[in-house]
Amino acid sequence: MKKISIVVPCYNEEESIPIFYQEVTKITDKMKSRSTFEFIFVNDGSKDKTLEQMRELAKKDKKVRYISFSRNFGKEAAMMAGLEYATGDYITTMDVDLQDPPALLEEMFETLETEEYDCVATKSTNRKGYSFLRKTLTKWFYDIISKISSTEMIPGARDFRLMTRQMVDAVISMKEYNRYSKGLFSFVGFETKWIEFEIEDRVAGTTKWNFWKLFSYALEGIVAFSTTPLVLAGLIGVIFCLLAFIIIIIIIVKTLVWGDSVGGWPSMVCIMFFVGGIQLFCTGIIGQYLSKTYLETKRRPIYIIKETEKMTKQ
Ligand code: UDP
Ligand code: MG
Image 1: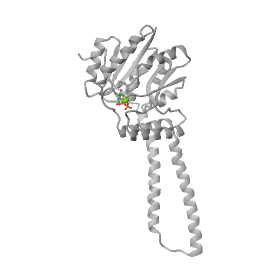
Image 2 (image 1 turned 180 degrees about the vertical axis):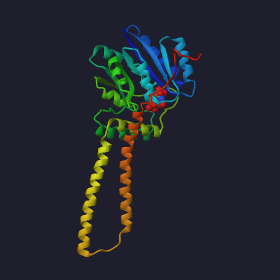
Image 3 (image 1 turned 45 degrees about the vertical axis):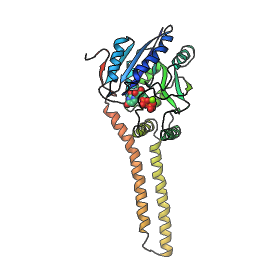
């Protein structure tokens, strides 16, 4: 019999955890003739009663295991910890807010068992419950990254997926500090089947993402999976050199024909600001890559565990 690990990152989700556990248990009960299960809840430094909820579930149900971080390390770190901790033959990652229907698990499991796939991933056909601004910016992000990265990023891809042990081992073998998991899952390859569904509103709680978090997450994705912005910066430099060269020729010819007349300093100031701006912009791009490199070279741990079901204070 195959074992399925259910990895669930949680950040301030005291209300969602009991509902999630109840709903998913319905599915696991339905599937228990064909597979065994383990839950791996990851408490990503929550400030509410999330950890207490996990402790309670672990006491009640032997299938429930949990990891608790020493502080908030972000969803990517939480997923990494869960994947490393999981012992199943198949591993699924799920958000605790039930925006992704756990009922799909049965179909996903069936696919991995009977077909030649290593992973069944999900994407949503709608973006229900997300603001207009978020929808627009997300679309832009996918438009841009699909053009500048050789790693395929699927628009609307959710973090809900079921993977084989082999694929998960490949993902956790990548120890990079700046983790953009949608890219990492795509980078490792393997055969992925995509299934579509309509996402639901959160069952409880609120989204943990604000504009800046999403913006820096998008930047992370671009810097981690494309070096095109660097090429672009170089290209802008070349174009500006050419432009300057042409202008110099024009000015020399003009001076020779009509003589030298002092003037035009406002336009000069504009040009200085413009070129200065472009330079800072390009330096900023390089800075992004440099800062990520800096963080990688420090080799800091991706997460720090304070407690698990095997080491509780009480
Ligand atoms: N999450 C986390 N750490 C964070 C932010 C979020 O573990 O720093 C978890 C959160 O508890 C949830 C999942 O990641 O289970 C998805 O978060 P959310 O629903 O807020 O994201 P959205 O659906 O808005 O993209
Ligand atoms: Mg959500």
